[in-house]
Image (cartoon, rainbow, N blue to C red; front, top):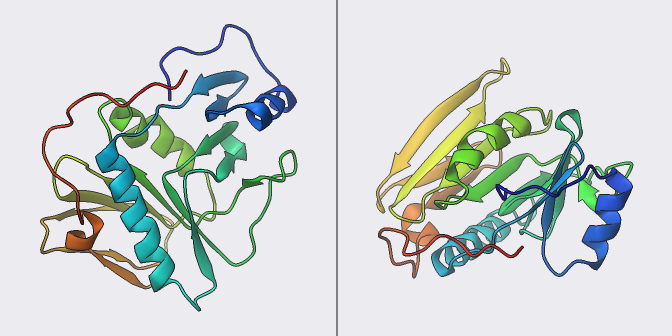
Length: 201
């Protein structure tokens, strides 16, 4: 999320009209519109790897991955946003106000960057927990082979797992998929992020 919001309050209808004609993506939160940052090359490589691995794993399982162009509505939080990758199982449940937005992701994946990490780990994670459908939330570092996985227990409690090293594997239990980190980071040069991600505002 950009740190500089628009100057005035917008309605959902105004936001959706703006987004329909915009060449860049924006996030909407309780009347404010925020420009979303462009992604680095490692960010895009990791997102692409994750999408293709999930697509292969989920064939015939009734679940489908979606890239960053799918809008997600968290109605309880008053949020419209875009994830790096989202997995939806069964039919897409569409938002009543926006037929292009989904409300029932089972898994959400975000690739971390310096400009978004605090938001992805903090407020955005709080928002995502208000999705009744969500079972796993995955945060992927682009600087080292390290993935944080949050997963909802049968009792409804969120638990935490850290997966580290290229010889490790990310187990997405709600999907029945195992993603080797060596493939998650395929063709990705690890190391300190060279520059903050481009702001497309």
